[in-house]
Length: 79
Length: 246
Image (cartoon, rainbow over all chains, first blue to last red; front, side, top):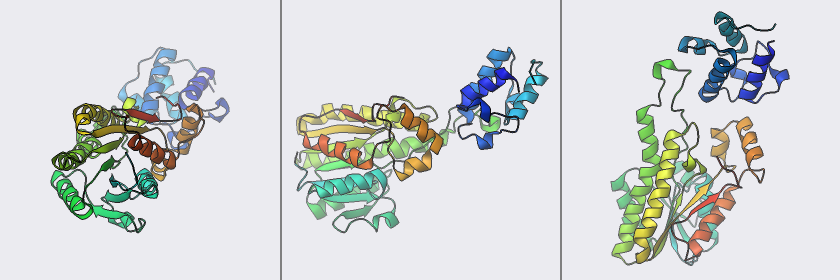
């Protein structure tokens, strides 16, 4: 998985990097609430130099959803 | 002020922090009357405590309750405004674009139950105190959220309002021998705290607290009795949070 994305997710949600995988979703992360979602959006926009709209943000309810959005926005991700 | 022999009215005293405060003051020799909306919870109060079913957001009910209690017990010398409901809602919910902003009615409701209730009860009790020349003490239970806690616009505003009202009243009523103080708990390990917050959040709170633990209800009750007993404490917001700042 993309190292930069793993670091962002670990920082925002207070997780260990080893806990982060594409199947992880908001149901399994206790503090993945709307405030953390805003932190996540701002971190992704800053680190990948992209702009996210509301429909993008709604898709980002799982790590795989976040990867999908980042790819749609043209971000370069490591496998 | 001596607690022994005082008549104390504790709102929201049937459960949680309020119950701990009521039991502590009763153990110190006060005559305690609990006013609570929850009749079921009041049915299991210790026998020696008085009880009065009351919605503290209704001024007419509050005035009647204070009149009835005063008639039965002779006076109310101490009021502990503990009734309230923790409420959390983010100001902006980016994950719910159809209703993205904090609902105004829920904001108003939280202000009513957590701040207006303190005004209503204190107004009813102080009127009786002033008319009967009774000296006394008002203790308002606020919260660390009064400093502004993310995700709690309404609750934080209400508790900050409680702090401000209390300091104002301490200046107005001190000359009448009525002292007004706040006890502002941080995170206390009550059932309602465990209901309101996830275990991971509580773990984070403990790690962020210099004393590395949650507070105990008994410690809040002790803070309440301290501000009652010390006659030179007036207009104080006593923070009880193990050193945690938010």
